[in-house]
Length: 267
Image (cartoon, rainbow, N blue to C red):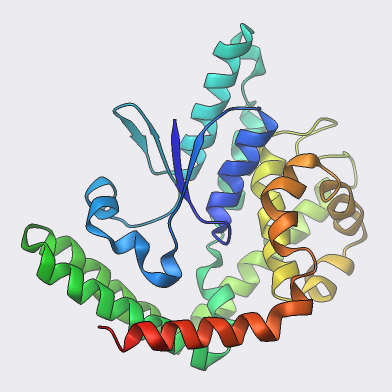
């Protein structure tokens, strides 16, 4: 079983947390969207959406995050010899879909300095155009990605889009806060795949230095978040990449800026 992912991808984190929690072995392939690797022809033929993550098991390829996690659950059940009662309940699945409905793309991009965002966007567009020329049979699919890149930049100029994304997040967090009044975890007294889906959302807020605004001000969530960061799966999938990252963030931004600028000159 192969997983194509990237440590910074929020959906990739969800799937990797599920794999760690279920103790499923897999082969890891890093695909860096910041450097346009998800636009490489080999990956694009497998997944024309160019989204991460992708799970491949033999001829079976899954692109949808929730479907991947449910597939991982079924593999875990078969491997353990248990029955279907170990699969996620209806409440868990409902929470999974509710969390997945919040798209972090515009919220995240809005908190990235414009000069870094525009350099990256320009570079990705050049990569798409270059790949389109290399693989004419995929030109229509690449053209869709090029149009999508321009549409994202246009939407980022629309304050209503950004306002909606923030309000959607606030509604989700308020609902989680209320739920955690009654239970230790999101769907009851045991850790479930609903919690797997939620952990990367908090990690993204932490990465963007927004803990005070969205997490600490909600006491139930703040307590829950401390608990989640103690899990071995969190430390393996997220903690080792991001804990202490602010110490190096200026150097990291400078490196990324220089790297992207140098790559832009090649295209």
